[in-house]
Image 1: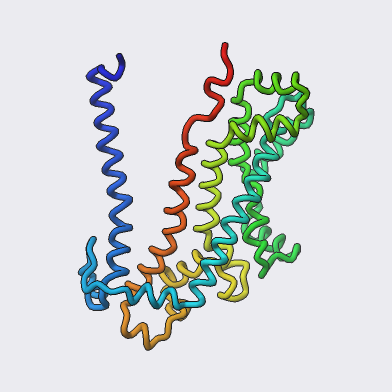
Image 2 (image 1 turned 30 degrees about the vertical axis):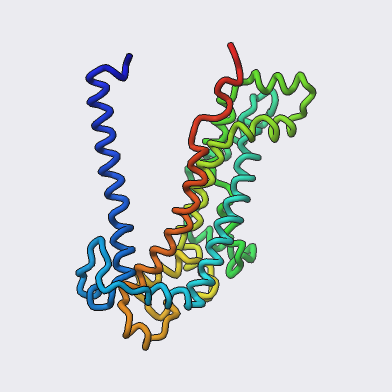
Length: 292
């Protein structure tokens, strides 16, 4: 068998070793941020914290959860991520399904494929995009987080190719049973496409959660910012006035501990969602559905 081959064993153990090293490199920064968030002011400011807290305390988390600005930003990010992901995936599958059909079944297919490819390659730029958003009245609106991101051409192409890989025998069998195109789409294609949908949903969810530029560009006040924009202002721009914590309390706490606590809290939702979607990252139900 191939897995008993010496070259395969070398390849296998090298892969395992490499993946372990990559995993360690991903985990260590999170452990460091978590340790800093639980450390006292002196240790955190002196950069003495490595992977374990020094002078353990929960003051940074207590002050963070008492911060109305931070909690409101979390609410905006959660709502944006959920609504944006659901609506984006609806647009993706509804656009990908007709594009996956043949030219006989959907005659304008080639036109729309080229149209999507052109708009994916050529971008008008930031200023025309901002002017468009302004003209349609989305500046300062929550929907500026959702509507401009509904159409992701790359996701449509991936979903289209996944649909095209589904055996036509399933389609033909459903047609012979009298199923309409909508019935075939909802009863045959969508259940089989759960692995692809889960993967693209995770990419879309992470994209919405980490997007900070939209809030900075289109919102008129910090109260409308998502969490990513708030953290960018605090961590990168170092504007501690946006933390929502009184300066008297900041004198008792470490700025690094407060920032680390907020960063770690921002990571938790994605870390929680991923295991639930991971079970879909397998081959689809189509395997074994058609016997040759």
